Figure 1 (cartoon, one colour):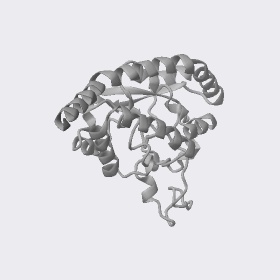
Figure 2 (figure 1 turned 45 degrees about the vertical axis):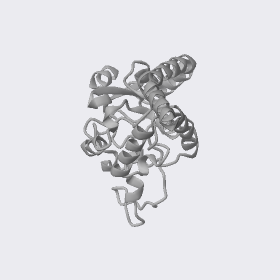
Figure 3 (figure 1 turned 90 degrees about the vertical axis):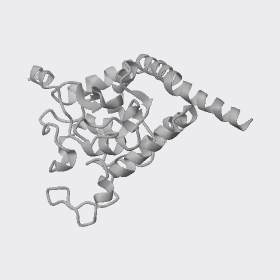
Figure 4 (figure 1 turned 30 degrees about the horizontal axis):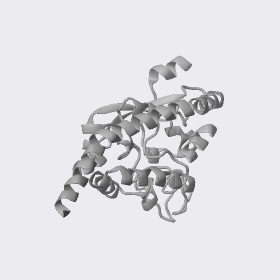
Length: 254
């Protein structure tokens, strides 16, 4: 009886992973596009009124089996932000963030356009956050756990367990734990846990992966200004790089 039950559970999990997970993602993204079309239009107008530049920006990310794709986000930074530079290397990251962008980052609304990535099948709703194409350390760590072999997600297990606070080995281990535990109930736990994390702004630190753990009372933010260890500055869900813009779009705005 025990063996039969385990086999049944195993088959159910496989069916969810290879079929129902995609069906649910397609349904949720379709509904999301319809319901969020008007709010996203208002956000787009606010971005255009607030600063010069495109509404969206594209960034090269690592997808399933390490295939690259362009992730979509609302633009939250000025178009003269240093191109593809790590946020922690900027002398004052906050000065590059627009007024509307600050609000979008605080509420994670800048991530909304990724429902289009989910709709076309490049991403899942739940999964490891997609690494940047040049985050070789994170990609290598995820290889140890098979976390690069599944679709990246809008949110995931690591995001509700620390987000930017996590060092890369810890984040990759949590992604690996998700791969092992992936199933409908566990995805629901990650999904609803994300809402609580966003409301509390848990683990959000400008500067990216492991930044909170690096902070010490004597540290400075690059221009001599002291910072506190427990300060959490608004940041995107999982970005530790400055925004990478489509130069053709920017040139068309000049």
